[in-house]
Amino acid sequence: MTADPAHAHSLELAARYAPSPTLDDSHGYQPDMTRMRRYRLERVREKLRRADVAGIVLYDPINIRYATGSRNMTVWTMHNAARYCFIPTEGPIVLFEYKNADHLNAGLEAVDEIRPTKPWYFFGGGQRYRESAREWAAEIADLVKAHGGGNTRLLADVINPLGVSELATLGVSVDEGMPLMELAREIKSPDEIACMNHAITVCEAGMAAMHDAVRPGATENQIWSKLHEVNIAMGGEWIETRLLASGDRTCPWFQESSDRVVRAGELVSYDTDLAGPFGMCADLSRSLFCGPGKPSDEQRRLYRLSVEQIETNLANMKLGMSFRELSEIAWTVPESCMTLRYGSLYHGVSMCNEFPRIVHFDQFDGYGTDGVLEPGMCFCVESYIGEVGGHEGVKLEEQVLVTETGIARLTSFPYEDNLLGREV
Image (cartoon, rainbow, N blue to C red; front, side, top):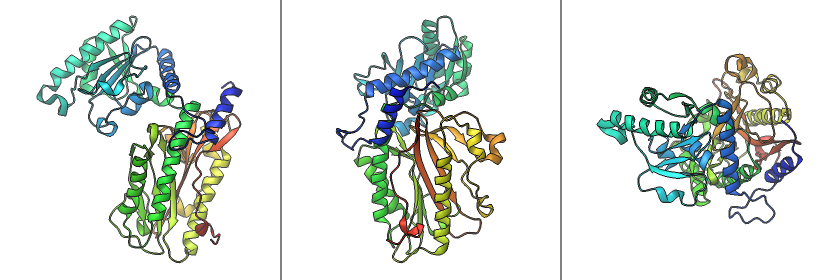
């Protein structure tokens, strides 16, 4: 990638100055939403041109929002195909919106036309879903023929088999569109970085509220609810998981929060997986000690190993380094922790967890994909340290940005002094 000093400088500014929750920080890099939408749409269209297709149909609400800026009932439409969008490689963008919700897109320059949706998923179409699917396919095929310039190849990010077969009867072939959208989202603009910084600011405020709520007698659910409360109150949107556990539920990882009561002397570990303001993801993890008292030597040992893994793997990241090389030189997980180690070393992040996923080197040939670290990529650096038969485990995760001049840490939430062995 050719170095662009002005772009690199703006990335650094966006990484260094997180907008305040009210977006009136005069010292920060303020996002221009129109410019961000223009950048994102052009990323999609550039890849559509390279793919030599007529366009793409988007159902995934994250992809619709990325390409157009339009959103509506994000979580609900993840499992109800109630709205979709047709983006031609060249030509007007048509958004098919949920009934009586056209007003949500008022003034949105990225959408040229709004039409009523034709729901053919079973809940929406009922016993007539096959008939609805034929009507849906006819309308999409007409758009392909009108704006495809004779090209009848179409991509789709999420589509049921019935839709593919109905389009095929009309001469339109459909191929997998999710890889194109993931790769489009891979390089972030300065405006996106500013939005991500804002989401991280909100997330870390929620983390602080959770830490304040950790006390003997509190339940995991009560602690976890603080993150939701702060996120919603500060303009955030939703949370993908509910990964918070305490005591012996921290080992193995991937236990969801419950009504278990936290006891003094236990660890509490969590992973935020938070979609904050602007729909940007803040994916941070921490483990902390529930007092009173002091952490045990074993708790400190696990915590220090996790910090060492994060900091070593973060320091390994260099502009232009391949994913394979990054995997090969990663921190060596102790043999006792290998079975329960986290499944990825790094993963991309913007509006959600995304490509690339960099796996451990012994798994790379089977599950890894290669590429290089480029400016504008954002990553989460992952660690879980726990042992089979162990009592507790530690989860840590940092979010970083690749710039022309190095790796910028976007997260600022501190590690725990008492678990590092520093008296407070």
